[in-house]
Length: 154
Length: 154
DNA sequence: GTCGTCAGTCTGAAAAAGGAACTAAGTTGA
DNA sequence: TCAACTTAGTTCCTTTTTCAGACTGACGAC
Image (cartoon, rainbow over all chains, first blue to last red; front, side, top):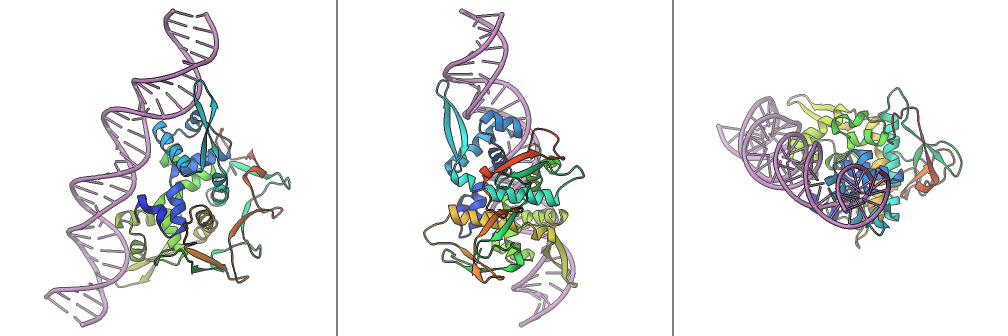
């Protein structure tokens, strides 16, 4: 598997990893979901080098996950806003946060709590089957080759 | 943010990223969920360098995501099995696969299809609220500081 | 006793990340 | 009007990771 062709692999996980599969990108996305939009804000929140931040933002824009929108004409200034494609990453981020809450917590408790505006309660994200609504477990899932599969990889 | 202290950050996403936030680790986990268990099998499925594979497997064992279990005494041979902590990563992997299916697909269709044994149907994973069961959207979630938060990071 | 298998380790070259200073365009304030 | 500040980057050099591939060691099969 080569990084520069990872997005062409016949595997949806590999294609996703090609886009968001590195540490900084995931942390940048966290900030996006916390309503951070500007270069300096990302930089000071994450202590990422400016060089890397610049690279990662460009890549996220190239893949259509963020949009670079001007918010000031003179001087020209831009902010980075999640597109729908970017917003659709939310389940990934929430699944990771939930796993961290469950398995990497310390005695102080959770860093963040999430409230569902629709029902007003603090919640955890749960992954269910789109067909029957039951909670998903790895052992309850059987994998079949789909039409886009070329070879013996997932 | 420093890599060697990432797992101590007061942020569950950062802690998760500290463990599985790199390309190879995610791809190795995909193979684990596809029932791959042995060094040579990982190596030939992923074309990862043996050195890196060895490192990543050690790290996953150290974090309690895989268990290194002997399957032959002479010669000593081991395989790598997902622990419960590892199995709990399933929603993350599935969320990534689903995003890839939705946003990174090509004309040939999906590489893999998933069947839910409980209901017998091909399904997509859906993330819902643990309290009301509604589908989750980023804009419907409000974030509060929890007891484990030290500073202004998520 | 040589070939093959499995689970790694070692090594040197290439690529990526880190750290810090620098640029550029405008704004504020004295 | 000139110095200091803000924002969004870029450039340069060092350190760390990753890559590609050879090598090791224990055994089994022919």
